[in-house]
Structures are given as structure tokens and as C-alpha cells.
Length: 94
Image (cartoon, rainbow, N blue to C red; front, side, top):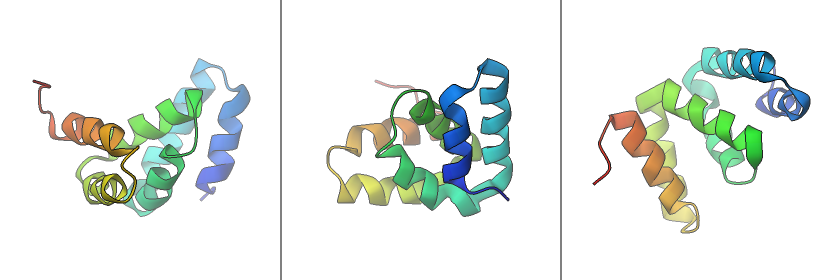
């Protein structure tokens, strides 16, 4: 299994097809990579951030407790975590 950081590095010059393949590769790694993804989501920007966020949403419920912890520990990240948790739960934003 490729490390999360290696896959994210590949995203830097990826076209849309490659971006989708890399996102699928991350999703296929499963919930074991969620802690790394949540950490990365707090530091990466641009395409990388979008792919990490979508991966967490696609992994689903396993992401929630790590997002909640990150929101608690990093108040600047709180709104991002809350948004992703709503997406995972399928809640409609009020």
C-alpha cells in the first residue's frame, strides 16, 4: 500500500483521470488511513485538499470520530470538520 503522502504527491501534476484513480486508491485503503487523511486535510491546499475531503466522505462513518477530535483540537479546522461530518451523515445544511 502506498503511503498517503506519496499518493498526495502524485496529485500535484495529475489530470482529472489520474486524480480520480488516486482518490479511488485512497478510498480502497480503507479506514486505516483516516487518521493520516485528517492530519493532511489540515495542511494541504487546492486539489490535494479536495481529494482528501472527498476520500473522507467516501470512507464514511469511520471518519467521523477523527474529524470530531481534530475539530476539538484545532478551532480553525472546526468548520471544515463539521461540514464533512454533515456530508457523511447526509444531513441537509440548515
